[in-house]
Amino acid sequence: MRLQVFLSHNGVCSRRKAMALVQSGQVTVDGTIVNEPSFEVDENKHAVHVNGKEVNAKALVYLLLNKTKGVVTSRSGYGQEATIYSLLPEEWRHLSPVGRLDKDTEGLLILTNDGDLNFALTHPKFLVDKTYFAIVRGGLKKPDIERMERGIMLDGKKTSPAKMKHIRTKDNQTEFEITIHEGRKRQIRLMFAKIHHPVVYLKRIQQGPITLGALKSGAFRRLTSQE
Image 1 (tube, rainbow, N blue to C red):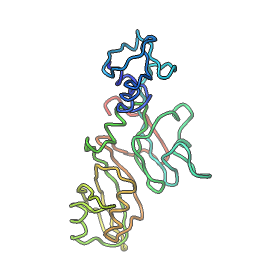
Image 2 (image 1 turned 30 degrees about the horizontal axis):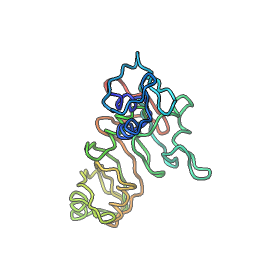
Image 3 (image 1 turned 135 degrees about the vertical axis):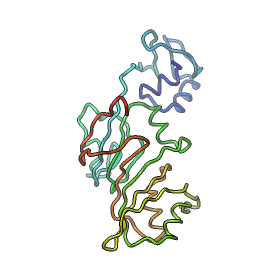
Image 4 (image 1 turned 60 degrees about the vertical axis):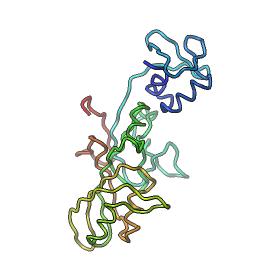
């Protein structure tokens, strides 16, 4: 296994940051500084240290959490804010979230110590779809939907086209499934706000091939080997 990959797999940092660590001389293999990220290491034979601290090969863990509204995707909230880690037992609190959900958004959140997977699911170049169930105020007309499907200007940059699936309109509210592959901060809320239909409820239900299914709010489970 390449040294850069070894560091990422074992939760030290992302693959890109691992490259920088190695090239800056902060990593040793069997006591010798290695500056080449592609250096081959055997986790069963070699001792790898970063800034003097040993990196132990560990089993990769993948959790699926149904995040509740009102908790933040962070290790520390502001003031008395609860975080996603309050929903997990101590043994899983070292895991990192794959992307973020804002405080008011519910639903699917993957947590893992697999840095490579985290990068692959969150970097825009991989075009990983994320699907949300949204309830917005008012009844959207065809031109509004077409604007969403073409992309919306946010902070001077156009979003990639969204996939829109109308579910129903009732009591001056419209339900949609919306799929995007970008991950800008509060992107879906801002897109709907731009067309004057503010979001009143938002829940992520799918990321890539992983679906939330019937997992209860606030509950978590380990992903299956197939997933």
